[in-house]
Length: 515
Image 1 (spheres, rainbow, N blue to C red):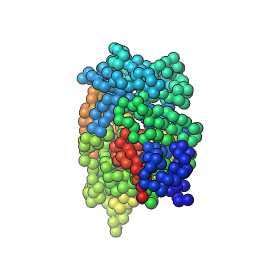
Image 2: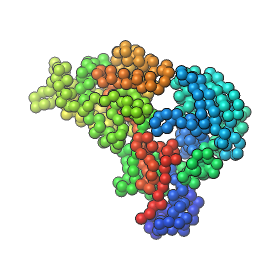
Image 3: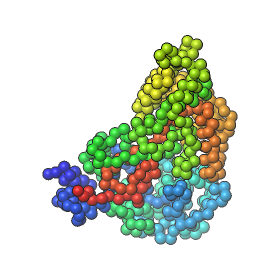
Image 4: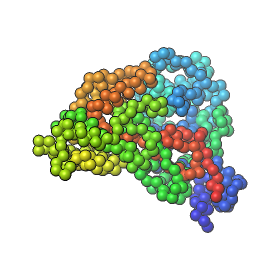
C-alpha cells in the first residue's frame, strides 16, 4: 500500500467514504472518489472545539450569519441585512433584513431574532462568554425591520463588524442568559449560515454539511470537518490527515514543500520592547531612537517566517489603516545613524570598537521577556543586533505573571511584551508606567474611545505614531500574527487578509491531488 493510499484511508473515519474509493482517489485522476476529496475540507484544531466563547467564533461563522460584515475594502457589506441607514454620529441604525433567509429548521429569520440577540448581548447579567455591547434601545418596526440606538459609534462598530451572529429566538426564548455557555442548543445548533450542523464526536471531530438553502452561492465544500488534535498537530499535517492547520507555530513547517504558510494580523496587537523612560541609561529619546535604528526589523520578521506584507510599525494601528496604505513610514534600519546618536549622547566605544560606556558606566541593561511565541528568538536577535553597535543587553526570560508584576512595580529596564490596541492609552497616557510624559500623546489617546468614525480613529493613530517615531518610548518589533499551514492542494488562502480558512471558506477550493 502506498503512503498516499494509507493517508487517504486514515481520512475515511471522518469522511465516511469507503477504503476502496479512497484508494481509487489516490491512483485515479477523476471519478467519484476524487470528487469526494474536492468536496471535503478537513481543518485541524488544537484540542476540543465547541461553539461557545472565543474558541467557537470561527465555527459559528460557518453555521450562522451576522447582520453585516467588512469586505476586502474594509467597508460594510450586507449578510442578513439587505440594506441599512445610520445617523451621522453612527449611533442610530435602521436595518432591513433580506426576505429569503431561513433557519435550518425552516423558520424565517425575522427582526424579532435580531432584537432577541442584541438584547442578549446587551444584558449585563448574561453569561460572561457573551460579548458586551452598549445598546440604548432596540425596536422592531415590522417583521424584517429593526431600529437600534447604540450608546456610541464604537459600540455600533463592535456589534456590526461581522463577529456577532444572530440567534434563533424561537429556539432560545425563555432560556436563562446566565446559563448561555451551558445551553443544550450548542450540542445541536440550528443556524442560518452556509453550513448545517451534522455530527459531533467528543474529543474527535465535528462535521458540518453544506446547507442546500443558503441564499448566497452554493458552498464549494459539501462537508467541513474540524478534527480535534490532542497531540502534535504537525504530525497530522505531515501525514496528510488534515488539509489546513490554523494557529500554527510560524517557526515550524514541513520541509518537503508540500505545504504553504500564510500569516495575518492577530487583532491590532503588536509585540514591542517597552523602555523604562526614567532609567538613567534609557531616558534620553535619542538613545531609544538609536536602539531602534540598530534593529533590522524586516530581517527579524523574516527570521520569524513572517511574509514581507506584514508591515513594520512604530505605534498603534488598525488593519483598516494597513489595507488603505495609511501606515506612516517606520524608522529605518540604520546602524550608522544609531552609532552617531549614541556618540552624541556621550556613549562611546572603547578601544577596538568594543562596548560603549559613558563616564565609566557601561551601556548595559536587562530585557525581561514574556513567554510568548517567538519572543525568545526575537530577544536573541535584538541582543546580537545591539551588540554590533556596542550595547550590552542581558536577556532574562520569566513567567508572564512575574514580568507583569515587575512592570507594574517599575522594577525593569526594558520588557518585551504584547501591546493590545486598547493598552496604548494606559502605556503612554498621563500615568504611563514607563515614566513617559507627553501631554499631546495622552490627549490623543484619551480621545480614541470617543471618536465618531473610523477616519478619525485612523488620524489619531497616525499622529501618535509620528510623535512616537521621534521619542520612541516603545520599539515595536512586529505585529502579532496568526499563521496557517495548508496543503498545496488548498487554493484561495493568502497573506495577510485570507489566512483564516473558516472566515475565508467561500474563497477556498481543493484540487483532486492529481499526479
